[in-house]
Image (cartoon, rainbow, N blue to C red; front, side):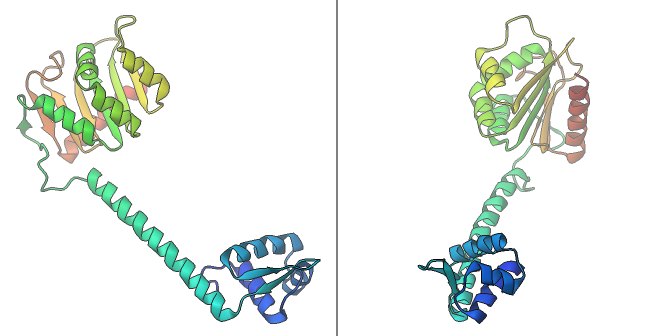
Length: 248
């Protein structure tokens, strides 16, 4: 019975009812050495499973369904649980496949430098982000990020992506309005500031790929940039980000 999904105590109560026939909770408590209040709870659970029926008597008595019918019901419950687990496993596998890179996909790797497709690369990387986007940017670059990719960033925040940006201290009251609103509405959208411009500008997407500007003072999508999916380089950029983030 336990192998079919019942707890040890549920099985004891069900088998006791099969043996003694319909009975009150008090008698079951004495027969199974389980406290009466606990017996009531177990009877309720067994009733939901269809293994126990409540007799319309005063005081209330309970009866167990035949063992053949009971085991059949338990098998049906287990099959339903297995079907649900299968669907969840397939859904999880699909999500993980979206996060974990496929070597055959056209993802920028170490040595790939892109300028003409830079804006398209940012747009695609933000839209595909599943759980985290991190950036260390100069103030001009951050403003560009907010204006060029505002829709993609806000959609990422809404779907639960952790967006964490580190930028230099801006002039007063210069944050874009949507950024101010998002910082209040979404706890997964965070912004920290440095007292001066960063010595390097880079972004990390899902810990899987990164982009670094050769000139940290250049505009976000102008000038030479290195897009890399090399685990060692991406890990180095992520470690650098957390080091700066923790110090702010």
